[in-house]
Amino acid sequence: MKETSAAVTDRSPRDGETIRLQKRLGEDLARVRKSLRSLTVPPHERIQEPILYAVENTGRLLRPTLVLLSSYLLEEEERLVTHRRVIEGAAVVEILHIATLHHDDLIDEAQVRRGRPSVNARYGDAVALLTGDYLLARCMQSAAALGASRMTAMAETLVDLCVGQMLESMQLHDPLRSEDDYFAAISGKTARLLRTAATMGALQTGADQDARQTLETFGHNLGMAFQIWDDILDICSRETGKQPAKDILNGVYTLPVIYAVEAERERLLPVLRSQPLSAERCRQIIAAAQESGAVSRAAAVAQRYITDALSVVESHPATARHAAVVKQCLRDLVSAFASQHPALKALRDIVQPAPDRLPSTT
Image (cartoon, rainbow, N blue to C red; front, side, top):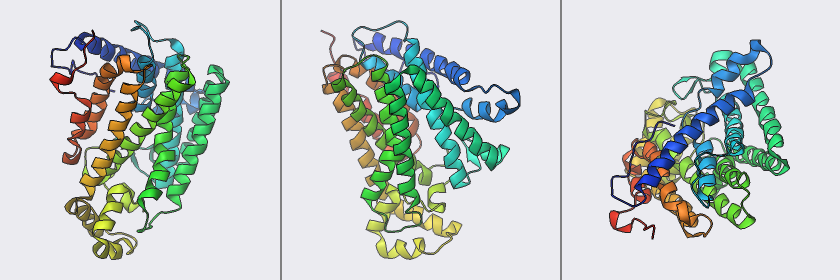
């Protein structure tokens, strides 16, 4: 994650706490990166290059950020140093995420990941597959070292990830894919891991079951929102470091496309049924999604999920005390998405409270 700015310009009693927490988050993410390397470096030098190539290009570290923020939410008093077990829990969640990206790129035959060659493009499919498998094994090994409940959580997450991906794969090139089909798939393939990240933060701080369930809901809703945003950017932005409209070309019809088909059925069904899609037909689908309001409609769904995510932590006694400050840290993640497409601009307003609504510390 890029270094955050002081961000909060309104003179709130919590400005100092926000700045301290943002600084702490940056320091903790640096510790997570070191932990990632130490937990995944292989014993043989010959195979280090493809593994470290993947591990050291980690992007925003969204999932470890969620582990850390969830642990901050549950603190009775602000801590100066985050416990090592929380850092390791964050690293374990990210290892699972990195492993799944290897398999995703193999399935999609993706040549680019975060603006540079994917592992399969650089080292070949066999090495990419084995690297993903190695990282899965290291994830489970590291989770087991944290405790049986962590190992169980990661294993259950992997099951749900596979189910979500299989649900999506079974409907490739299906122009009649429904909204419910889409939600079922992304709940498993994306939101489940963010839900686990939030739960890991709670587990590593010894939270009770009620607090863990609150953070599960928080993570799930964030995960649903982030996947919808990513799907909007897949068809609308060239600034993501990925091949534009990759999902459409691969036959994965996401929420903006589903809504576009609902609005422009006669126009789009013949286009989507004409396989393989040409570049011109792909442009027609993107144009229909934008012109029909499908992109804005999908963005509105994401906004509801993010609102629900924030509401649950603001209302629960165990998390409410730090919710306003954590909300400001989330704003930086949201802004990274919002800057890339006009339909997402409203997201900033959801996580940036108006000055007269800033909470009091009294």
